Every structure is written in C-alpha cells, then in structure tokens.
Amino acid sequence: MGHTTASITSPKFPASPADKKVMGSTKVGTDAHCRRVAAWCRELAIAAGLSESDRNLIEQAALSHHLPEILLNERGRSRLLADLRLEEGVGELIGDEVRELLKAFRGEAAASGRLVKLAALIEISDDFDQYFEAEPLLDTLESPVSTSVDAMMSYLQVTSRADVARVIDRLPVFPRAAREVVRCASDAGSDVRELERAAKLDQVLAGLLIQTANSAYYSPYRPIVAIPHAISYVGLDTARKVLLAAALRSGFATARQHKLWNHALDVAQSVEHLAQHSTLDIDPGEAFLAGLVHDVGCLAFSMMPPNFLDRFQRLTSRGCPPFEVEICLAGVCHGEAGAETLRQWKFGESTIEAVRWHHRPERSTGSLASLLYLGEFCCDSDEDLPSVVRLRAALERAGISEQVLAETGRRESCLDSLRFAAAA
Image (cartoon, rainbow, N blue to C red):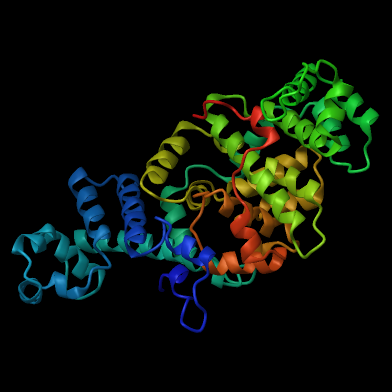
C-alpha cells in the first residue's frame, strides 16, 4: 500500500496551494510514516512485555523499514557510499541486528523465532498506519476494517465504547440557561428583547457579553454597563455569537482544556466564514455553533483512566495523530464521543452528524461535516493525517473554492475577549 497523500498529484492534476500545504505537513511522507510506525512498534513491544533492548531494536528497525534494500546489503551499501563519496560510518548507523530484523520483516532470510515475532509487530504497525493513510480512498461504509486495525486494537485497546459512554454520562449537565441561550441565539429571527432575556438567565453570560462590548476590539467612548446597550452596540449577529460562545465556554474550564477552547473559537469563526462564501445553502449560524462544539468529545477523553491517558500521551508525543490513537485505544474517536455528548445535550441532528464525521466527512450525508473538516484545515489542526484526497472531496461537498479556503484563517475578532489568555 503506497503513501496516498502525496501520490495523487501529477502534471495532469497539478498541486494547488492547498495540496502543497497538505504535502508540506510534517505528518506527510515516508519519514513521517516511519516515525509513526516506530511509535506504534514501541507501544506494541511495551504491551507485549518485551525487554528494553527489544523495544529499542524494533523501534530502530521501524524507523528504517522503508530504506532501499541496497543500504541493508554490505557490499551494495559500500559501493553506493563509495560512489557518493560518503564515509562508511554513514552505513554503520544501521546495526547488524537491525539489518537482520529488516530482512526478516521483508521475508528475505530465515530468522529466529524472536526476530520473526518482532517482524510481525512491525508488519502490524506498518499496515495499521497505511490503512489510515489510504482510508480517504476507500468506500469505508462498505469496506471491512483492516485486519491490522483489529490486530493493533487487540494489543493496545485499554477501554471500550461502553466505557467512553459511561464517561460521557459523567460530564457536567448542560445548564438549562445555556440550553436556552443556544436555542435563542441559534435563531436568526430572535430580536433584541429575546436575546436580552436569554442573557439575563445567567450573570456570567451577561457579564461576558458586556465585557465583549467594552473590549479593545470595540473601544466604546463610554463604558457599557447594560445588556440592551451591549446588544445594540455590537449588533444582533455579534450578540448571538457572543452568547453562544459564552454559554459553551464554561465547559472548558480547566487549564488543560483552555487550548481546546481557543481552537474551538478559531474553527467556529473559520467555518462561519466558509459558510458565508459557500455555493451551497449552508446556514453560517449553524456552522458557527458546530465549530464551537466540534471537539467537545475531547472533554470525555480527558477524563479517561490513567492507563488510557499515559498510552495516549506516549503515542501522540511521538507523532501519531490523536484521531488514530483514540480509535486504537478506545474503538471510538472524539468525533463520535462528541456526537453522543451533543445528543444528550439536546442539540440538533444536523450538528450532531457533522461533529460525528468531521474527521471522516466522506461518511456524512450532509455538507456541514466537510465544512468542519475544512475549518480544521484552516486552523492547522494536527488531529488526523493530512489528505489531499479528503481535502479536495471536502471542498467539493461544501461548495468552497480554493481561493476562499486560502483566504480563511485566524484573524482579529470581537470574540478574542472570550479566549483563555494562557492556554495549557
């Protein structure tokens, strides 16, 4: 299986600026793939109880598993290094035992039972990562899950969908006042009196609205102290957005969640801009709300047991995308967890579906999931593997041009006063 992200461009289909951004990602290419495979291999070795020396061996072999065979052959390597006028020491970076393990991985020589076992772990890890690289090309609703995914999960899964569902049940109940604010602020027909009534349901919401009206972005001549004045000063549309964001902000209260909230604000504003310039009939207000809650499932994963969090941290710190790691460790990603959370919070079905599939927009029947995927792209999210195939499909499904996508991104906003100053 090849590296699909970079393989779809050609002189006939030249790379666009968005394509180049994808292919320029540090997560794209053979080197990035090898680093991820090495991370998966090491975690498999830990789960299998292998010695530290075997862990290091399998990690080094995985880092080199796509090297040309000539570099693994003594005579061929020496001739190549001589032709390139390189020192022999360059070849010595690949130790004898690593070469033997790679030969076992490629089935080129008889090997001991120990090396066969280690080679099998490299094969599982390699297939597992390439499955996610190729997934945008697959009819994933019809195709069976790769056996490598099943094998990896059998080794590494530390929790289940049922466990994630129980954690979701323990999330704070969405307050009645916040639900009313979301209902009212999501209605483009709501007037000043309705927004004023919604803001007065909670002093914190009212305070954040007034704080926004008094922020440096607006710099009023005189301090604004009343809700009606704040609404009229910033305008109905902005007041709706501020109240929506304020109603949801309290759910990201801990220091670890501040970065997640700031990202949600960025994505919400990006998808609103995209919706306003889509050739399709997409409600910018609904897109903004979906952007605010698209990663709410991460709140559930932040409450998982230590064995999940420790393994998650080890894998993601070594370059494995969170989306891929979540599926491996829990059988479910934060998009699916977020959808179930929003269902309990009585959100609309279109928003729920968009959040569920925002990392796999090709599985959604609507265009909002594709819009969220593009919003993440604009905000340089690294939650999943970049994909030119998925990006182009999302642009088409959301009715967005390359030019609009290029013009969308982080900018100064009236909502900056709702950001957490020190994201963890």
